[in-house]
Length: 270
Ligand SMILES: NC(=O)C1=CN([C@@H]2O[C@H](COP(=O)(O)OP(=O)(O)OC[C@H]3O[C@@H](n4cnc5c(N)ncnc54)[C@H](OP(=O)(O)O)[C@@H]3O)[C@@H](O)[C@H]2O)C=CC1
Ligand SMILES: O=C(O)C1=N[C@H](C(=O)O)C[C@H](O)C1
Image 1 (cartoon, rainbow, N blue to C red):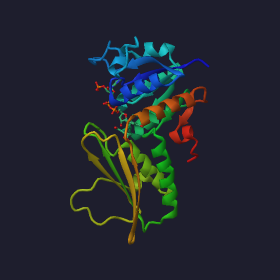
Image 2 (cartoon, rainbow, N blue to C red):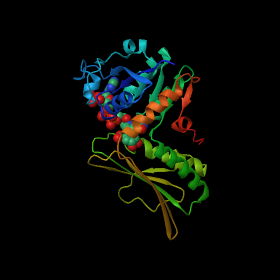
Image 3 (cartoon, rainbow, N blue to C red):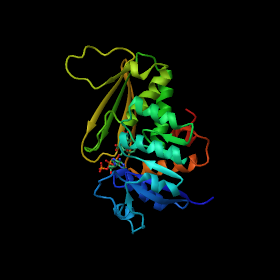
Image 4 (cartoon, rainbow, N blue to C red):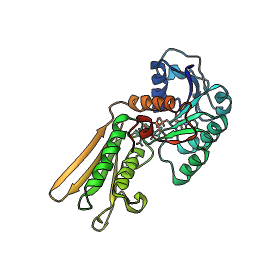
């Protein structure tokens, strides 16, 4: 099979640059396009040079429709509005769409689901092997421990992150809720302040810290009577997310249209 031709959306961002490097490190994928928003000062710049590599001849563009005429997939780590705009083009062109963007609302997810009859989409708040394994463990723990164990999820990220709780924290919360067979929306407590009253049994709490250059730390705490279990993951380099996204794109190539998760890609069966 020919090398997979991939467009990186948000090519000038932290993840975009990591993705361009990840593509350069693998043998069976090539960078076919680099996307940034119209008006970005990066338009026309060489995407590989932005990523700290030798020039590739792939210049940053704001025109996904033209770029996608000769591509197989798009790796999208941008902002929700951009991802939702890209979804329509990817579906029209039949491109594999790997969505790493977080902060997606319920209505954004409904738009994404609406195109999955036309193309393969892999969407996950975290593309690393470690976090997806962690999610499977959290679900298992939540199945085993009853509501006498309070579940609290703590995350810390770099100072530039714009959404909270992180996509990963929400994914871990969903895994805990699935394990307990409860709805996350009904039981999530997202940040506490002031005279909150006592914690309700069965709630799933979230707390977010921001600062420095932290790539992504997540802990799920099961706090029971006189004992506490903490499961943690520490991302030490965002290349783990980039390589995960690349793996997802290659896995989804030729798959039937549908919405897939990283658990599907990694064969974790959760
Ligand atoms: N699922 C996962 O494994 C991971 C997910 N993420 C998520 O990925 C997203 C990006 O993170 P990060 O790279 O740190 O953020 P950055 O802000 O560094 O990068 C986002 C990039 O997208 C660009 N952008 C904005 N609008 C558009 C548009 N309309 N078209 C194309 N590009 C656009 C931004 O440009 P400008 O700066 O000009 O606005 C910027 O270059 C976040 O939602 C983050 O949470 C991050 C790591 C792992
Ligand atoms: O913005 C980030 O940096 C990250 N975002 C994702 C999230 O919201 O969970 C994944 C990772 O933690 C890094």
